[in-house]
Every structure is written in C-alpha cells, then in structure tokens.
Image 1 (tube, rainbow, N blue to C red):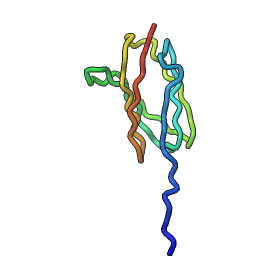
Image 2 (cartoon, helix red, strand yellow; image 1 turned 90 degrees about the vertical axis):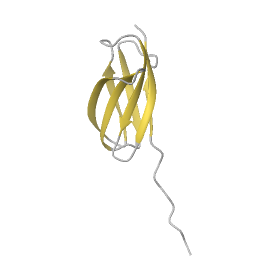
Image 3 (tube, one colour; image 1 turned 135 degrees about the vertical axis):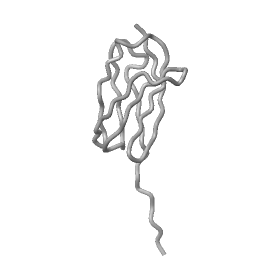
Image 4 (tube, rainbow, N blue to C red; image 1 turned 120 degrees about the vertical axis):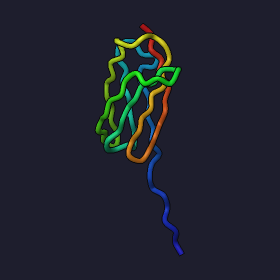
Length: 91
C-alpha cells in the first residue's frame, strides 16, 4: 500500500539588503497568490501594510526611506502561510 507524500515545498521569505538603507527587496519562495505584507514596530504598532500578488518565486522592492531607523517585524500573510521576519533599517 502506497501512502501519499506531501510534495508542498517549504515557504520562505527574506530581505536583501538587511540592514536596509532606503530600499530593500523582499524575496518570497513558494507563496503564490495574494499576500499582505505588514511592517510592525517593536511595540507591536503597525507602521505600513500593503497587499501583493506573488508568483511561486517572486520579489518586490519596498521603500523604507520614510521610516525611522531601527528594528521592525514584517508579517507576511499568504493564503496558506504566515511568516514573520526581522528587518533592520539604517539611514
């Protein structure tokens, strides 16, 4: 008897550069469809939220020049996954 194997690839996301200056690029892998990207300060307050439509492997430039220098958490909520990443901004 054969059993079904889970062939879904793991979802991943990262920023480059990180620390960021004025712009950083969010890279996503295996997160197709609509996703909301939300920047949250260390006090848990939302700073910015934007919806994107990603292909299986995709990237999007995020302008951060208008944000204060410091550390942020970035929540990436996709249709089937939630990822949280740390982003550091240095001006």
